[in-house]
Image (cartoon, rainbow, N blue to C red; front, side):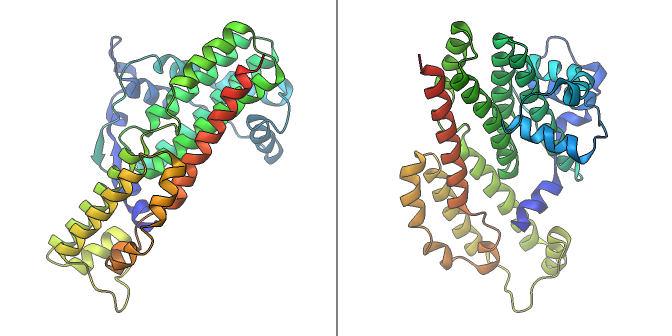
Length: 319
Protein backbone atom coordinates (compact mmCIF):
# COMPACT_ATOMS: atom_id res chain seq x y z
CA UNK A 1 0.00 0.00 0.00
CA UNK A 2 3.03 2.32 0.10
CA UNK A 3 2.37 3.50 -3.44
CA UNK A 4 -1.17 4.39 -2.40
CA UNK A 5 0.40 6.62 0.26
CA UNK A 6 2.64 8.18 -2.35
CA UNK A 7 -0.35 8.92 -4.58
CA UNK A 8 -2.30 10.31 -1.66
CA UNK A 9 0.52 12.67 -0.81
CA UNK A 10 0.97 13.69 -4.40
CA UNK A 11 -2.48 14.73 -5.53
CA UNK A 12 -4.64 17.66 -4.43
CA UNK A 13 -8.36 18.03 -4.82
CA UNK A 14 -8.41 21.28 -6.72
CA UNK A 15 -11.49 22.73 -5.10
CA UNK A 16 -9.49 23.87 -2.08
CA UNK A 17 -7.77 26.50 -4.20
CA UNK A 18 -11.02 28.41 -4.64
CA UNK A 19 -11.92 31.23 -2.31
CA UNK A 20 -14.63 29.85 -0.07
CA UNK A 21 -16.40 33.17 0.22
CA UNK A 22 -16.55 33.65 -3.54
CA UNK A 23 -18.58 30.66 -4.60
CA UNK A 24 -21.15 31.34 -7.32
CA UNK A 25 -24.67 31.09 -5.95
CA UNK A 26 -25.81 29.14 -8.99
CA UNK A 27 -23.09 26.48 -8.89
CA UNK A 28 -24.14 22.93 -9.82
CA UNK A 29 -20.93 21.48 -8.39
CA UNK A 30 -21.43 20.06 -4.91
CA UNK A 31 -17.67 19.80 -4.34
CA UNK A 32 -17.37 23.57 -4.03
CA UNK A 33 -19.97 23.60 -1.27
CA UNK A 34 -18.35 20.68 0.48
CA UNK A 35 -15.09 22.62 0.66
CA UNK A 36 -17.02 25.48 2.18
CA UNK A 37 -18.45 23.08 4.77
CA UNK A 38 -14.95 21.80 5.58
CA UNK A 39 -13.81 25.35 6.25
CA UNK A 40 -16.66 25.82 8.73
CA UNK A 41 -15.79 22.78 10.84
CA UNK A 42 -14.87 23.64 14.41
CA UNK A 43 -12.06 21.65 15.96
CA UNK A 44 -13.59 21.10 19.35
CA UNK A 45 -11.09 19.93 21.95
CA UNK A 46 -12.78 17.00 23.66
CA UNK A 47 -11.54 14.58 26.26
CA UNK A 48 -11.03 10.89 25.57
CA UNK A 49 -14.28 9.88 27.24
CA UNK A 50 -16.31 12.27 25.04
CA UNK A 51 -14.59 11.07 21.88
CA UNK A 52 -15.32 7.49 22.81
CA UNK A 53 -18.95 8.37 23.55
CA UNK A 54 -19.26 10.07 20.17
CA UNK A 55 -17.98 6.95 18.38
CA UNK A 56 -20.26 4.65 20.38
CA UNK A 57 -23.26 6.87 19.68
CA UNK A 58 -22.60 6.95 15.94
CA UNK A 59 -22.54 3.15 15.82
CA UNK A 60 -25.48 2.60 18.15
CA UNK A 61 -23.50 1.32 21.12
CA UNK A 62 -24.66 4.24 23.30
CA UNK A 63 -27.87 6.33 23.37
CA UNK A 64 -27.91 9.98 22.38
CA UNK A 65 -26.70 12.31 25.15
CA UNK A 66 -27.63 15.95 24.62
CA UNK A 67 -25.65 16.97 27.68
CA UNK A 68 -22.41 15.37 26.50
CA UNK A 69 -22.60 15.81 22.73
CA UNK A 70 -25.07 18.62 22.04
CA UNK A 71 -22.47 21.39 22.20
CA UNK A 72 -20.28 19.64 19.64
CA UNK A 73 -23.13 19.50 17.13
CA UNK A 74 -24.21 23.06 17.88
CA UNK A 75 -20.69 24.30 17.11
CA UNK A 76 -20.66 22.46 13.78
CA UNK A 77 -24.29 22.86 12.76
CA UNK A 78 -23.50 25.42 10.05
CA UNK A 79 -20.97 23.08 8.43
CA UNK A 80 -23.47 20.20 8.55
CA UNK A 81 -26.19 22.32 6.98
CA UNK A 82 -23.91 23.46 4.15
CA UNK A 83 -23.00 19.84 3.44
CA UNK A 84 -26.61 18.68 3.50
CA UNK A 85 -27.66 21.42 1.09
CA UNK A 86 -24.75 20.60 -1.21
CA UNK A 87 -25.94 17.00 -1.57
CA UNK A 88 -28.96 18.28 -3.53
CA UNK A 89 -26.72 19.60 -6.32
CA UNK A 90 -26.59 17.48 -9.49
CA UNK A 91 -22.82 17.38 -10.05
CA UNK A 92 -19.66 16.73 -8.05
CA UNK A 93 -16.33 17.38 -9.71
CA UNK A 94 -13.49 17.63 -7.21
CA UNK A 95 -10.76 17.94 -9.83
CA UNK A 96 -7.29 16.48 -9.36
CA UNK A 97 -4.05 18.41 -9.48
CA UNK A 98 -0.53 17.61 -8.41
CA UNK A 99 0.42 19.29 -5.14
CA UNK A 100 1.27 18.68 -1.49
CA UNK A 101 -0.16 16.48 1.24
CA UNK A 102 -3.48 18.37 1.39
CA UNK A 103 -5.52 15.22 0.61
CA UNK A 104 -4.63 13.94 4.08
CA UNK A 105 -6.41 16.94 5.59
CA UNK A 106 -9.22 16.54 3.09
CA UNK A 107 -9.91 12.99 4.20
CA UNK A 108 -9.80 13.86 7.89
CA UNK A 109 -12.29 16.67 7.37
CA UNK A 110 -14.56 14.55 5.19
CA UNK A 111 -14.57 11.79 7.78
CA UNK A 112 -15.28 14.22 10.61
CA UNK A 113 -18.09 15.94 8.72
CA UNK A 114 -19.70 12.61 7.82
CA UNK A 115 -19.64 11.47 11.46
CA UNK A 116 -21.14 14.74 12.67
CA UNK A 117 -23.91 14.48 10.08
CA UNK A 118 -24.76 10.92 11.19
CA UNK A 119 -24.80 12.16 14.76
CA UNK A 120 -27.14 15.00 13.80
CA UNK A 121 -29.59 12.44 12.44
CA UNK A 122 -29.36 10.48 15.68
CA UNK A 123 -30.03 13.67 17.65
CA UNK A 124 -33.11 14.49 15.57
CA UNK A 125 -34.39 10.93 15.91
CA UNK A 126 -34.03 11.19 19.69
CA UNK A 127 -36.18 14.33 19.55
CA UNK A 128 -38.86 12.48 17.62
CA UNK A 129 -38.13 14.24 14.32
CA UNK A 130 -38.06 11.18 12.07
CA UNK A 131 -38.26 13.22 8.86
CA UNK A 132 -35.28 15.34 9.85
CA UNK A 133 -33.31 12.28 10.93
CA UNK A 134 -33.92 10.42 7.67
CA UNK A 135 -33.10 13.51 5.61
CA UNK A 136 -29.78 13.82 7.45
CA UNK A 137 -28.84 10.17 6.94
CA UNK A 138 -29.83 10.23 3.27
CA UNK A 139 -27.77 13.39 2.79
CA UNK A 140 -24.91 11.44 4.32
CA UNK A 141 -25.31 8.61 1.81
CA UNK A 142 -25.19 11.13 -1.05
CA UNK A 143 -22.12 12.82 0.45
CA UNK A 144 -20.35 9.48 0.65
CA UNK A 145 -21.12 8.78 -3.01
CA UNK A 146 -19.83 12.20 -4.03
CA UNK A 147 -16.73 11.68 -1.91
CA UNK A 148 -15.82 8.56 -3.86
CA UNK A 149 -16.11 10.19 -7.30
CA UNK A 150 -12.91 10.54 -9.29
CA UNK A 151 -10.65 9.49 -6.43
CA UNK A 152 -8.28 6.66 -5.66
CA UNK A 153 -9.00 3.71 -3.41
CA UNK A 154 -8.25 5.53 -0.17
CA UNK A 155 -11.05 8.01 -0.89
CA UNK A 156 -13.53 5.19 -1.59
CA UNK A 157 -12.60 3.52 1.69
CA UNK A 158 -13.24 6.71 3.65
CA UNK A 159 -16.51 7.16 1.74
CA UNK A 160 -17.45 3.56 2.52
CA UNK A 161 -17.00 4.13 6.27
CA UNK A 162 -19.20 7.22 6.05
CA UNK A 163 -21.87 5.34 4.11
CA UNK A 164 -21.94 2.42 6.54
CA UNK A 165 -22.62 4.69 9.52
CA UNK A 166 -25.68 6.18 7.81
CA UNK A 167 -26.97 2.83 6.55
CA UNK A 168 -26.61 1.36 10.00
CA UNK A 169 -28.42 4.33 11.58
CA UNK A 170 -31.30 3.79 9.16
CA UNK A 171 -31.36 0.09 9.99
CA UNK A 172 -31.52 0.77 13.73
CA UNK A 173 -34.29 3.32 13.28
CA UNK A 174 -36.25 0.87 11.14
CA UNK A 175 -35.87 -1.93 13.67
CA UNK A 176 -36.86 0.39 16.52
CA UNK A 177 -40.03 1.41 14.67
CA UNK A 178 -39.23 5.05 15.36
CA UNK A 179 -39.90 6.31 11.83
CA UNK A 180 -43.26 7.38 10.49
CA UNK A 181 -44.63 5.91 7.26
CA UNK A 182 -43.55 8.85 5.11
CA UNK A 183 -39.98 8.75 6.43
CA UNK A 184 -39.76 4.99 5.90
CA UNK A 185 -41.00 5.37 2.34
CA UNK A 186 -38.49 8.14 1.63
CA UNK A 187 -35.63 6.09 3.03
CA UNK A 188 -36.62 2.95 1.14
CA UNK A 189 -36.87 4.79 -2.16
CA UNK A 190 -33.38 6.21 -1.70
CA UNK A 191 -31.78 2.93 -0.60
CA UNK A 192 -33.39 0.96 -3.39
CA UNK A 193 -31.85 3.37 -5.90
CA UNK A 194 -28.45 3.18 -4.21
CA UNK A 195 -25.99 0.82 -5.95
CA UNK A 196 -25.81 -2.48 -4.08
CA UNK A 197 -22.15 -1.92 -3.16
CA UNK A 198 -22.47 1.83 -2.71
CA UNK A 199 -20.05 3.06 -5.35
CA UNK A 200 -18.47 2.28 -8.69
CA UNK A 201 -15.54 0.29 -7.28
CA UNK A 202 -14.40 -0.75 -10.74
CA UNK A 203 -13.92 2.89 -11.73
CA UNK A 204 -12.13 3.59 -8.44
CA UNK A 205 -9.75 0.70 -9.09
CA UNK A 206 -9.06 2.05 -12.58
CA UNK A 207 -8.19 5.44 -11.07
CA UNK A 208 -5.91 3.75 -8.55
CA UNK A 209 -4.22 1.84 -11.36
CA UNK A 210 -3.73 5.00 -13.42
CA UNK A 211 -2.05 6.84 -10.54
CA UNK A 212 0.27 3.94 -9.82
CA UNK A 213 1.09 3.46 -13.51
CA UNK A 214 1.78 7.14 -14.05
CA UNK A 215 4.11 7.20 -11.06
CA UNK A 216 6.08 4.23 -12.32
CA UNK A 217 6.20 5.72 -15.79
CA UNK A 218 7.77 8.84 -14.29
CA UNK A 219 10.34 6.64 -12.57
CA UNK A 220 11.23 4.71 -15.71
CA UNK A 221 11.49 7.83 -17.89
CA UNK A 222 13.65 9.68 -15.38
CA UNK A 223 17.34 10.27 -16.09
CA UNK A 224 18.02 8.75 -12.67
CA UNK A 225 15.30 6.16 -12.01
CA UNK A 226 16.70 5.14 -8.62
CA UNK A 227 16.69 8.74 -7.40
CA UNK A 228 13.16 9.23 -8.74
CA UNK A 229 12.08 6.05 -6.96
CA UNK A 230 13.43 7.40 -3.68
CA UNK A 231 11.71 10.74 -4.26
CA UNK A 232 8.32 9.14 -4.82
CA UNK A 233 8.57 6.23 -2.40
CA UNK A 234 10.54 8.01 0.31
CA UNK A 235 12.93 5.07 0.51
CA UNK A 236 15.88 3.65 -1.39
CA UNK A 237 15.33 1.01 -4.02
CA UNK A 238 15.54 -2.29 -2.10
CA UNK A 239 18.80 -4.19 -2.55
CA UNK A 240 18.56 -6.80 -5.27
CA UNK A 241 15.43 -5.25 -6.77
CA UNK A 242 15.09 -4.73 -10.49
CA UNK A 243 13.11 -1.84 -11.88
CA UNK A 244 10.30 -2.98 -14.19
CA UNK A 245 10.58 -2.67 -17.94
CA UNK A 246 8.02 -0.84 -20.05
CA UNK A 247 6.71 -4.25 -21.14
CA UNK A 248 6.29 -5.31 -17.53
CA UNK A 249 4.51 -2.06 -16.74
CA UNK A 250 2.10 -2.76 -19.58
CA UNK A 251 1.47 -6.25 -18.17
CA UNK A 252 0.71 -4.61 -14.83
CA UNK A 253 -1.81 -2.27 -16.46
CA UNK A 254 -3.52 -5.19 -18.16
CA UNK A 255 -3.72 -7.13 -14.90
CA UNK A 256 -5.16 -4.14 -13.03
CA UNK A 257 -7.74 -3.72 -15.78
CA UNK A 258 -8.87 -7.31 -15.29
CA UNK A 259 -9.25 -6.70 -11.56
CA UNK A 260 -11.34 -3.59 -12.28
CA UNK A 261 -13.72 -5.60 -14.47
CA UNK A 262 -14.22 -8.15 -11.71
CA UNK A 263 -15.01 -5.41 -9.22
CA UNK A 264 -18.06 -4.51 -11.27
CA UNK A 265 -19.56 -7.96 -10.63
CA UNK A 266 -21.75 -8.76 -7.62
CA UNK A 267 -19.34 -9.41 -4.71
CA UNK A 268 -20.17 -13.14 -4.48
CA UNK A 269 -19.44 -13.61 -8.20
CA UNK A 270 -16.32 -11.45 -8.00
CA UNK A 271 -14.96 -13.48 -5.08
CA UNK A 272 -14.38 -16.63 -7.10
CA UNK A 273 -13.20 -14.71 -10.14
CA UNK A 274 -10.67 -12.68 -8.14
CA UNK A 275 -9.33 -15.82 -6.49
CA UNK A 276 -8.27 -17.03 -9.94
CA UNK A 277 -5.90 -14.04 -10.17
CA UNK A 278 -3.83 -15.06 -7.13
CA UNK A 279 -1.43 -17.12 -9.21
CA UNK A 280 -1.29 -14.67 -12.08
CA UNK A 281 -0.17 -11.84 -9.83
CA UNK A 282 3.01 -13.80 -9.16
CA UNK A 283 4.04 -13.35 -12.79
CA UNK A 284 4.31 -9.57 -12.40
CA UNK A 285 7.51 -7.70 -11.61
CA UNK A 286 7.99 -7.94 -7.80
CA UNK A 287 8.17 -4.16 -7.36
CA UNK A 288 4.92 -3.68 -9.25
CA UNK A 289 3.32 -6.56 -7.41
CA UNK A 290 4.22 -5.03 -4.05
CA UNK A 291 2.15 -1.88 -4.68
CA UNK A 292 -1.09 -3.62 -5.68
CA UNK A 293 -3.74 -3.25 -2.96
CA UNK A 294 -5.46 -6.45 -1.85
CA UNK A 295 -8.22 -6.79 -4.43
CA UNK A 296 -9.88 -9.57 -2.45
CA UNK A 297 -10.02 -7.33 0.61
CA UNK A 298 -11.53 -4.55 -1.50
CA UNK A 299 -14.18 -6.98 -2.67
CA UNK A 300 -14.85 -7.81 0.96
CA UNK A 301 -15.40 -4.10 1.65
CA UNK A 302 -17.90 -4.04 -1.22
CA UNK A 303 -19.69 -7.05 0.17
CA UNK A 304 -20.04 -5.47 3.61
CA UNK A 305 -21.75 -2.43 2.08
CA UNK A 306 -24.11 -4.76 0.21
CA UNK A 307 -24.96 -6.63 3.42
CA UNK A 308 -25.55 -3.52 5.53
CA UNK A 309 -27.65 -1.92 2.80
CA UNK A 310 -29.73 -5.10 2.59
CA UNK A 311 -30.28 -5.13 6.35
CA UNK A 312 -31.36 -1.47 6.29
CA UNK A 313 -33.85 -2.13 3.48
CA UNK A 314 -35.24 -5.16 5.32
CA UNK A 315 -35.66 -3.20 8.56
CA UNK A 316 -37.35 -0.30 6.81
CA UNK A 317 -39.66 -2.67 4.90
CA UNK A 318 -40.92 -4.43 8.01
CA UNK A 319 -44.57 -3.62 8.92
